Length: 279
Image (tube, rainbow, N blue to C red; front, side, top):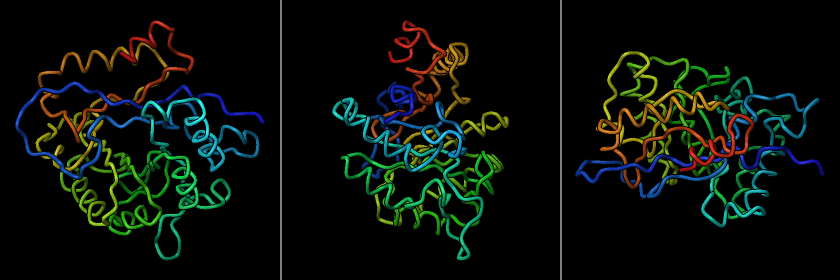
């Protein structure tokens, strides 16, 4: 069987820098150490052409295959436990009842069945959405459906939710991200909550309220997206180095700064540069 390339790419490991301070933080018992796993976006992006590229498109097959490889290649044994579906998994429209639904051709068995398969491997299932009318790729967002969508994620036995911030107003995020987090917690299902709240506000010229963010999110993006490029990775490293005194205070068990995913195993880094990112 031909396998998709990139199992070593787009692993995720969140920045662990922290100072010991007494702050009030989210206490859902999750992400006591930085979440580790595999995320599709950097290698596979929004490839939805399963007719011409069936082994590398965003599909049920891709995520089952990656779950198998994370176990068989030994990553699960050292703590890489999440298989995270990023953007482009959704159908273009909600169901008649207003529920989120996966693309019926690429996820023919549905998300709950995919979740069950990933759990059968001893792994955890992550899913992407967006606090806006649309996701970054133009699929339905959670705005106006937050309670319903949180319940849907719980029904699908999701373990990790990444909430992006496209097609939304950064000034509304101080209310919106906590509201969605509230609905996630109210389901009773433990779900790691990954937020994009600070980075959208920073780029809009707003000052993120990290005291509020750490009461809502298990991790949060601080800076622009990574790409398969040493120059972009270097910018991210420089940002965290230049801002440690501002942001390290808020990192610790259950709440982490997120410098985006590892791109080790893709094409843009040399071996030495890959070691730099991993370190």
